[in-house]
Figure 1 (cartoon, rainbow, N blue to C red):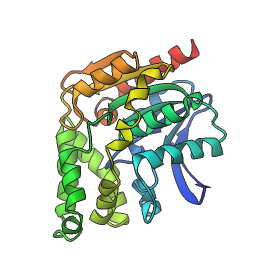
Figure 2: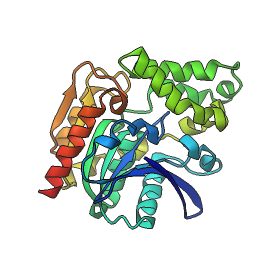
Figure 3: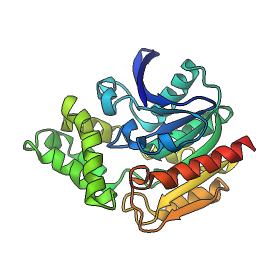
Figure 4: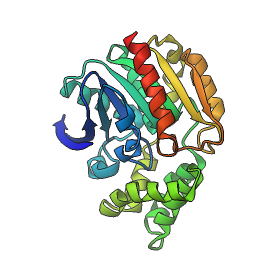
Length: 272
């Protein structure tokens, strides 16, 4: 995938892109970046695939300084970026926080979302998870923790969210360098303190009104986002739910083939 940068409403925005055709936009969460989709994107068939980076995350961490990077704001940034790229309608495929962004964008601008895939996404009152909430509450302590302790926290998150040590290590190598380059724990605290569960609770009762095709894929052993929330999303969106038994949180990294299969199935439904 090729890296791209543009400025939208004064915000420098980044994304990774490959392919051509109707667009599929991939959305990441915390503590990840577009590299979350590195093994999924090449398997998406016959589409322009764009993995967008939320301002305040990944290489765009500096764009979060002094700016609203809540999930509600991110949905507005996403829509502004899509319009800037001439994307009138797209399939949104989203993980973790990105799933909240996708739900809010779909509720606010249903005409711009042709299909919706959610995998181990935040929703309703499922978040922030206790670990991230603790970081938000103890921000000043976290910022001044001993050298290396923040990276132990990252490693723990990836270890709890992946099925194998190798996958957790690969994820750490993909995502941790952005924190190293842009403020370490201070950047993570800023992300954690921006999270407000009211953002998804506010649109929860509108999810059943959405009419675009949707699919849900869930790692059933996820400690961060329980399968019960995937089941509730599937019911509200009238969407099939594909359970990954034994699957944990970071499904795009642990099960890229399954995620790509579901995106390709959604593409067929949208085209049909």
